[in-house]
Length: 620
Image 1 (cartoon, one colour):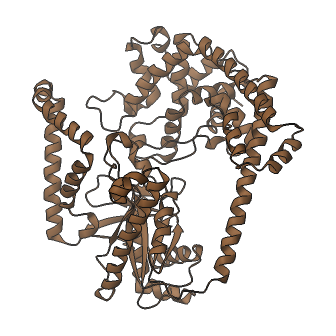
Image 2 (spheres, one colour):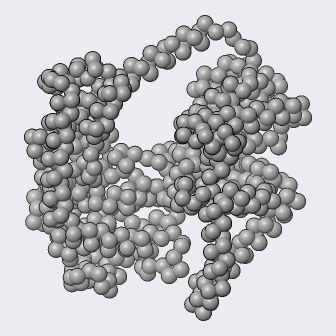
Image 3 (cartoon, one colour):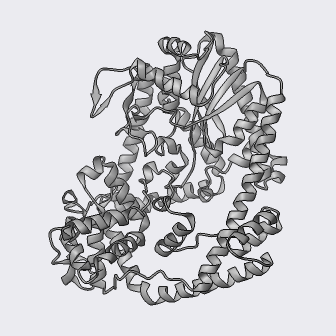
C-alpha cells in the first residue's frame, strides 16, 4: 500500500470515532459518541474518556444516593460484584471507587497543565479559520478562495495571520493536504497514525463532527465550498508544527486504582440498570393483564397519532383521560421520506431522519389568491424593514449614527422582553396571527407529477401512497378507525436560542413535523388509497376523516389543520378542540407539580404558570 493510501486509510479508521453534528438551522440531536457504539460498553467508555475527556460512569456519590434510595437492588448488586470477584460492604467499595477516581483525576490535571497551553492556542486559531470558511451567508465580507476548498483557502491566507508564531511553516505548505499530513507524521511509525489522527479529530469534536456530516451529506454549501477531514487534519497538523506542539499520541494508561474504580463503577451501574429493567418489566406485565381483563369500549371518537417523542407522553395521557380517545405513536416524519419546499421558501429541506435519503419532492402551491396576496404583502413589509435595518447597521457611513439613534429603542425592547416577556410574546403572537399560515392558502403537491426536481420525483404514485399508509397502520397495530384520525406532527417555540431547531422534530431532520402530517392525511383521504387499504384488511369506515395537526411541545397546544374537513364532522372537530384545551390544562398542572411550581399554579392558570415563560430569554 502506498503512503498516500495508508494515510487515507488511517484517517478513515480514525474518523469512525467522530460523531456527526448537523448545522444549527436544522440541528439534530445525536449521540456525540456514536462512533463507539460497536464496542463493548466498558471499552467504549475508556477510549472515549481518553479522547474527549470526562468520565463515563456516575460518581460514587450518585451510586450511594441510588443505593440508599432503593434504586439499586442489593441482591442485584451482590451478583454483579461477585461476577467481578469483589466481596464486602458496598459502602467500603464505594470509598475505594472514590479513591481511584481521585487518583485518575490528579494524573489528568497534571498532563493538562503541562501540555495544553499551546494546543489551546492552536484550537483558537483553527476555530477562527473554520468559522470564516464555514460561514453560510451571514458574513458581509466572506473569506476569499473558499471555492478552492478549506485546505487551499487556509494555505493561501494563513501566512497573513499574526497569531501564528512561525509563519514560515504555513506559508510554504504543499499543494496536497495528504503531503502535509505525510510530512507531519513521517517520524512516527504507521501503527501510531490512527491514534494521532483520533486525538487530533477529538480535539475539536464539534467542528470535526460537522465537517464529517457536511462532507457525507453534500449539499449546496459543500459543493460551493468543499471541506474534508483530510484538509482539516492537514491545517491542524501544520498549526501544531508552527506552535511547536508534540503530536505523539498519549499512552492512555491508567493506574491500578483507576482501573479498579472503573470496574467497580461498571458493577454498580449494571446492577442499577438491572434493578430498573426488572421494575419496568413487572409494571408493563401488570398493566397488560389489566388491559386484557378490561371491557372493550367500542369505536373511539377520535384517534391521534403523535411522534414517539418523550415530550408528547404527558399530553397523550391527558387526552386519553379527557374523552373516548386513543393515541398512537409513530416516527414523526410519518414514514414519508421526502424533501420539502414550503411556499416562498428559499431552499428545500429534508423532512426525514438524517440516516434516510429523501425519495420524493413535495412542494406547496397556493390555492387561495386573496389569502396569498395578504401573506405576500406582510412578507414584503417584513423583508423590506429587515433589509433597511441591516443596511443601516452594516453601511460604514450610517452604522455609528444608526446605533446612537436606535440604541434607546433597542434598550426599551430589551427591557420589555426581560421584564414583561409574556406581554411581548402576546403582542408578537397577535402580529403573527395577522399573517396567514401556509396551510391556510396552500395545498401540497402530493400526487405524482411525472417530473423530477433534481434526482427526486415530484409527488408520490398511487402505489407509493398505499404502501406508506399501509406501513403506518400495520406498524402501529391499527385495528379500528374512529370518525376522526389526527396525524399530529410536532414543533417547538423558543426565544433567544440558536439551537431552537434541535427542539423541533428530529425525525424530520430538525424541522417541524406538520408538513409530513399533512402529506399522510392527504394520502389517507384519497378514495383510491382507502379502497386499496380495505382490500389489504384495514376496515376504514366511510365516515372516517383523516386530519393533520401540529403539537407545540413547548406549550402543549395542538393546532388542527382542518380546512378540508367536511361539515358532517364539524361537531366532532369542535368537541375534540374543546377536549384538547382541557387536556392541555391538566398536562400543565401535572408539569407544574412535577417541576415544583404547584404553589404558583394555585393563583394562576396552570398553562400560564408553565408556559408563560416560553419567551423569557434566559429560560431556554
